[in-house]
Image (tube, rainbow, N blue to C red; front, top):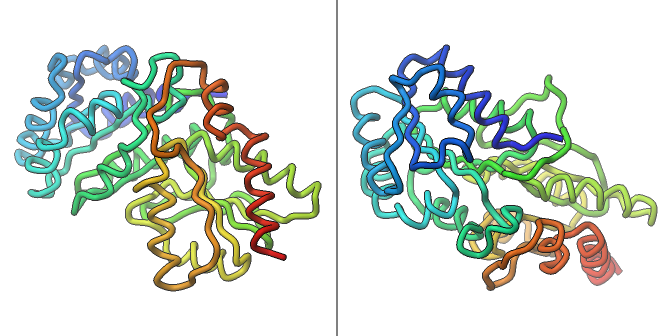
Length: 311
């Protein structure tokens, strides 16, 4: 069990050796986002800009235009909510090569409550032209996708979880921006997910198999661009699609998948996430249960959906 944010700090440390033009910016959250490792090794390339995310994004855009690879690091709620205008005008519009790595997303933030739980960050970033949006799950996927994002030349938003999650991929798995990965083959239902909900999806798939329902589980960490080919291939096999995410049901993975299906293969789809409501304070498990994202609730909801559409 490892928290993706811890992996992020270690990857950044390694990439700092390889890329001398990486500069890390943070808004007084270096300890929480784990960029302190990079700060200790490369103090001349790490800047704390204080609690002013707007300036951080503008400075990131400027550094990019001079050939650096700025990493703008803070919580997801502050990265997308407080600095939207600066991201739009200084990063996305001029296609500046800034990597916005946002930690602590979703209900999994837990006790920090609604003011710190980003449930609409993917929606906000996905709507920006030129912006690539990634949401990895375990330690392997987090490490590999951050490496891919640094290799890629363009604005990128990466959602990195705070909660610990078991390792789901082996170290030989190949990752690519714009591509999903099948973790479990199935023939009755397709489940697409990302972040900590990918682990929940795999646990639900195990339970449903005991009821003779075969579930295909896909990690769709690349939400924009999304893997249309894999979505269509799997949905044509199962004719039944479920998306699960620790994010609002509006504008996230569920919406992105629906946009693909409605144009090319309109099969029944269940979008599972947080309804049109803010979160509250509680442990992650308490909140997942209350908002229907715990494994028991997911199993019941997917069973109901399956029986409503397969018989």
